[in-house]
Length: 222
Image 1 (cartoon, helix red, strand yellow):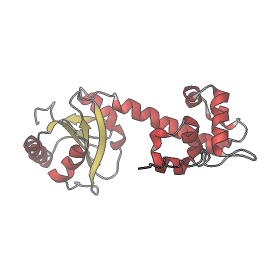
Image 2 (cartoon, rainbow, N blue to C red):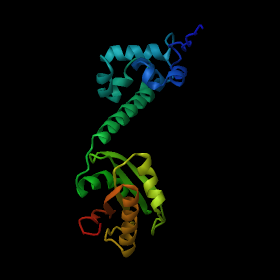
Image 3 (cartoon, helix red, strand yellow):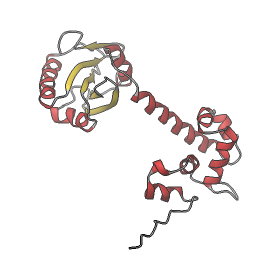
């Protein structure tokens, strides 16, 4: 029986190649070309990406280049430079998040600070692996200026998808006062019990105020 080799898309069609083979099988220049979208007169996007890599001496140096340095490269321009800078920053943040260990309420609060100033209540969960490394931050419910309704299913669905070993609950108080309410205590107890049933430990519940926070574990409420 004869086997016919799959014909690969031309190298100047990186989007098609990604769809056919997956992103991991593209070269650096092909991946960059997808971000650049278009080339210049006489050059396709892959050629432009290849020249860009050669000019800066590789992907690592390219990722460290400033917007001004990128946009001054002939054929790039400010819009493409901004796109590249944003992509490199996202990559850096992914790397940091995968290696970030949450070992204290203060470290959890540092991750959650952006939610402190929300005008509506956001209830969410930080998922952690067995080593305590941050996997993801999920908002599972958004309410009005009062309470965001939340159920165990909403909380633990993302934790199960992340294959998390433990979670840290969090929500903000739009009033600015992070003092736990009776309802906060009740829902924390309910979610802790639900977590035990499925083998996911609730380590803490962080309540965010405007300029401060309360760790319910620190208050012996978890």
